[in-house]
Image: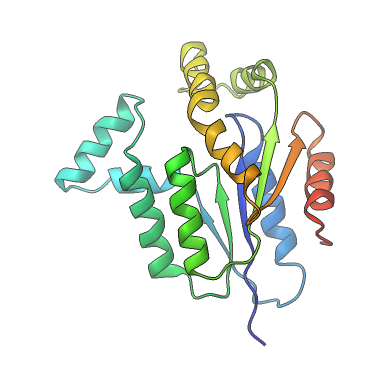
Length: 201
């Protein structure tokens, strides 16, 4: 019997724990059902960084964009997702989008892509944390790019650019939308995600 793929989209401000929760869910998905289960992970950041390492003109332009801390064009981000799915997705893997889409137009384009693949009820998990909580966590992890001004810029950008995408998902009947309190212990966040999505993993 063919595996029915599930799609999960993790969204939330920087430092909210999207990657951690995506890791846990990936592991849980492959503990049930078919032991040959595969889960594809798609993150705009990883795709863009990989793309920027090329030596073509477009790759070099992207390298400059990323080094300046600017936002990549939506057309390139969508092209990278689509290319990855076209070349990798067989129709049997689960797919987790980690921290993307990041803008309203990207969310609309992703929806058309998922419907093309006949994905039923993609799950959208919005990890809601306060800007203060997010900033404190980002400063604590002490990464080179986690400087106070850069953090403030990312949090403001989340409010102006990403929230419209989240509201789009929330208002659409196509998605299984779950808003989760991200300011809890990791296990409690995961349990709330599973409960709100109606998953028994």
